[in-house]
Image 1 (tube, rainbow, N blue to C red):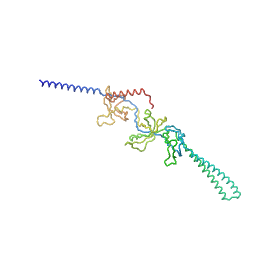
Image 2: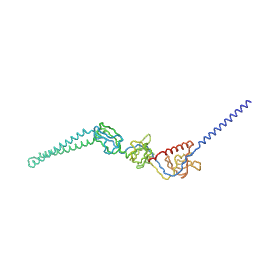
Image 3: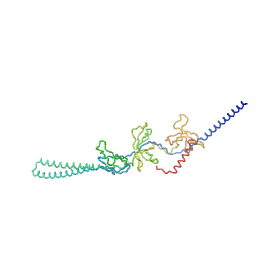
Length: 388
């Protein structure tokens, strides 16, 4: 009797275990159903295809001048600071002119003496000439008088040259801005003694750097894979972190003939001239350069995110799988693509305008995507129109 009871208990346990197993499988199946794949729909339509080469670069002024003084001395005035705007001819700094002014005064006095001596020599020559015509003066004596007159005239020439030179040195104690621009850096202060930029072995003391920021250029490194698509005059857009909503227009003015290596990547430096009329771009800013290398209009386009590689081995690289909508369902469909910029791809075969394709998403991804789109719409409703 006990034996039969044990059999009954075992049977009940087995039935319960089997029941729990099937309930678990059913729960798993329901969970899988809840994760049923959803699709984000994209209409197949014609449009413009652009392929862009991007590179990182830095903003550099085209006209940048390192200011030095031809004169040496102590700075007694410097009215500019870094960031100040100056016009050509504005005062940058003034050196103590006392010593040079003394040289000018001495040179002027020397000229006065030379002119007086020349006048005296000229009067002497006129008197000796009269004596010579009367036969009272020999040829040798007349030659001596003429020599003295010539020496007096030469002394005047030298005195005038010396005066002009000292006046020039006096002017050189005043340093003026050679161009209109911004004071980028200031290296000296009032009271500092500076060395001449022409008489010093070291090249003299740098006073300041001034640069015109109306026209600047961006120097960027282009990967060797893309450099063959780059040519002089090609249009480019420049974007900076400071003004991410703005795209500054420019064009390529130089492509380096020789590559450089940076972190094991071969790059060619490309220089893009950019108009900077409002002065928003600053020297040294990091920038992203976008160079359009391909543009095709009225081509059939699909999002690159919709493309999948077919599972069949040996499938050509230009053959891709998409999910084509037929009725309310999406089915795998093979198409042939052309150029792909990783945002959009050109469809060569397999689709036509008006078709709808889908990008598969799990229900959770769909919810996240819906929330993100709602957030973007909400943000845009409070934003302002961005300047392009």
